[in-house]
Image: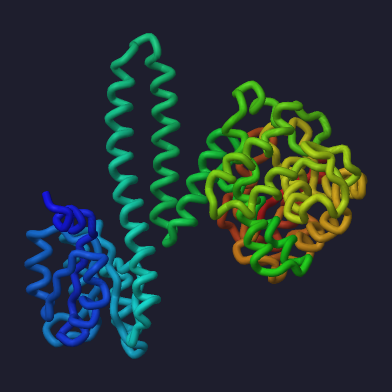
Length: 433
């Protein structure tokens, strides 16, 4: 095979559909060095081609005389569902654009007229997304084959193999769901990392996301710039990535924030920072992850930094993750109410915690306004408001579910919760939007 043939084989196949030949010519000139391109001016002809030839990316105009873009994409989706579909449209096409999104499953749309560099950048990102999904399908198939071989390998380990396989299937499903719900490569990678952390530590689904969103809310309350807020959010998602390097025995001793910490567990941020540093675009995250167990009085680890020498992101993560552990930690045998946890944190302000950060967290939980989209607030009954939406099931100590996720808080419901607290001399913590 010649060098030219090899280059052609490595390119993705791009189908262009537009009833205006000049537009097709313009797009082909712009993209011919990056893709194997085939062009059509009529939808039926393009559909016939799709039935016989593999295509990776499809770009179609919306307004065409014989068949519009929405109708074309509906057929294209049935024929080649894995192809990435992109709509070429003008602002006046919104009604049919919505139809294309609903029926044709388009990935995104390009407005007319387009800017050449922006279009090439978009297609570069689309190509990475397509290749990642393709690789994931291959890995899933390989994983399925490996599971079959493992089951036959040793009958004495059948039970363990079954449990491991079930866990891997569950993890694979979470990853597949994450890949479908995200439209950028960065978010896909972050979701996979977060799922790995939750699987390794045994924390419930959404734990890292809750901590990350609350960290970003605190950062916004402190009026940090948008780039810093986003960086702190990403650090919150990945703050426990170092736990993948710990043994099962150490993981079982997790006890963030109680002061009774396993020495090896306390140093998981060092492992996490090394892992994150391997991804060059995550370099800016390493110091916040590395220093998350420092104390403001200089008694923390790993470097005994004190006060403002501790990065602000690390100070925020320390407060938020410890607050979450106190009220909802999976391994915490003495869960606290929200008011008690606030008192506990404040009693250690200026010793372990930055007092300004502690106060900011309490303000975010109390005020609940414009501190971050989709933030999950941790509140006691005293913090509930009529109309709040419950984000997690309220499970009683006996294992019964008192309220289910998705319910809207009402006045009778609040009264019922108060009566329960009075009758059983306990305090309830809820996670709401």
